[in-house]
Image 1 (cartoon, chains in turn red, cyan):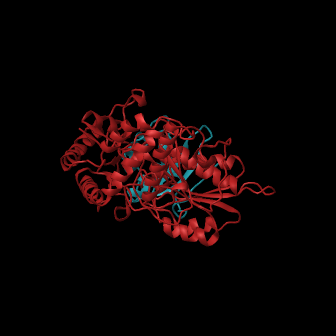
Image 2 (cartoon, chains in turn brown, cyan):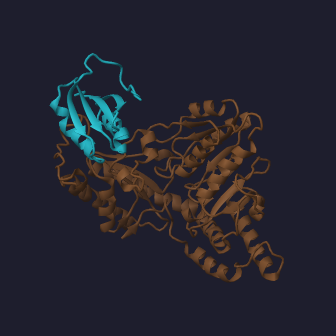
Image 3 (cartoon, chains in turn green, red):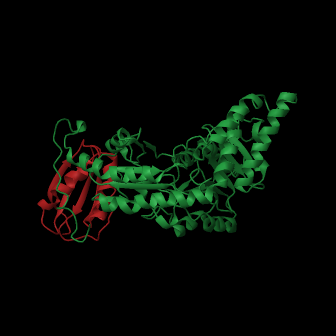
Length: 401
Length: 90
């Protein structure tokens, strides 16, 4: 049994669990009130803010807490666009990469509906943005925001954020970095103007996101006014979860170097061994420039949903970018943007406590599961029409394998 | 609304020698059918795959690229879905 879906949610760090339970006693009151209980809540909230700012290497008053990473990304994009909206010329141009998390792409689409032209910059086969295209797009007239993730949530590829940040600074365009996949896993790039992060990616509880707006960066609430969180995020903050997320982040960050080496060694084994053991298996992404804990592969001629279900039956929890495994029945926009095969896809994202034994067992299991699925021909979706049997050798170039 | 995406320079023979109907089939069945039947056309000849699963739109060109076959174009079908034109390379 092994949970390999840490990029969706890392299991709660034990220290964070203890902090969460303690905070339920200490941090329930309204931090905006002047009474004793309110002051105590305010104190622990501000301490959490400072602890998180230390790890993110920013000022505490630049950090605001949201209800999720998604809410943080929405507020970052829409607030930055709104602040730079012209009374006479309307909202300005927004640049995003094609492989941003769907919450960033959805926020950009929302801005587009409100009049912002949006440029989506493509990526190479390794998932890394085309830097020249991105810079050209940022240089377009009236660009008011550039959005580039620090690393990709599906394939782990780290993006050239500092190179883009430097271009954005030259052109005086704010840069929003969605760092949800990377915080706690790798060193953060510098030079960004706005940042979003999510507590449950590093072993905090779900329901805590962070929106960071650097001093001097123009930002205006895209929604109704609210006094909470420096007027940036509406509603009463989830104080116990925030405190637990701060504890988890400190815990993760302190262990980052050790964890990087250990998890990278394990994902490398999957990268190396699976293409040897499974015919027509492609590993995606850029090994040399990747988050340590994520590895994604596609097995040709296999249904991704069936693969996830069979692996789950055998005790391995993974996710998939295949259309049949998604609630929208759409293939992963990340894999599609890379020109990669989207079916038969599996993302392995290792939690901090992943073991050699579990990874070895996984590497032994996958070839059996794939062979079994490739051998089964009848599929309910075909309405009884048998799917053709496969002769994989027929369509394989001579030099391959 | 046709949106041909030229991946190869236009060649002499682009009339498909074979048409595979994968309409209504979910991923990965259209790709399995393509891999199974590409050998039925001669080397250098074209075949057409009709499919309407959203995954086919990226997976047909991705498969051609991976298997070093020629991917020629994607054309939208009036009834929904796409016609993919592929050239057998070997």
